[in-house]
Amino acid sequence: MTNDSLLQTGDDLGVLNCTQCPRLAGFLQTVKARYPDYHARPVSAFGDANAKLLIVGLAPGMHGANRTGRPFTGDYAGILLYQTLHRYGFATRSESISADDGLQLTGCRITNAVKCLPPGNKPVPQEIKQCNQFLAIEMNRFVQGGGVAVLALGTVAHQAVLLAMRLKAKDYPFGHGRVHQLPPGNGVRLYDSYHCSRYNTQTKRLTTEMFAQVFAHIVAELQS
Image (cartoon, rainbow, N blue to C red; front, side):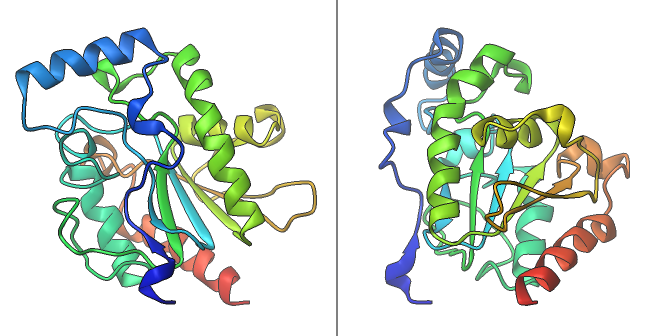
């Protein structure tokens, strides 16, 4: 894998200039006024353009991706994620601090179901549906590029992936550690994990060992 085949946070889909959800666009303006140095815009995907693994989160965090402009960067949720990515050879560093910290992903790409910071970290259904156009394009590129493993962090991400692929959620129920073979026979598997949020990790709903087991399963199947 060469550096030429790696993409840092890019915007070829026009994500950065999207204002299609009035509530989210207005909230970002308010955040930008309060924190002038923050990114406070939609956040694009980050990672390897030729990834075999696509990780889908929920949405940017207020003081994480919304601040830095890169998914899971600079916030608590990114601590376990990037440590685990580094442990399994997907990341060049175990810590993601800023968009210009030199970290690169190999064989992996990260995006979110919703590209904008939602008030209270809770997007409404219409916003998830509206933003799904971007995830659908990302999923199509991923599959066409030979991607085979999608990791959904949480129920919202899980359902957004299915929506992007025009599959019914009732046919693929979410559950931590579950693996779903997705049609139409393209070899793509959907892996489920609880989200690596502060709440889930501090309450032990998601432990380091549980998260590692999911990645170990993914890596084993990628190498098979």
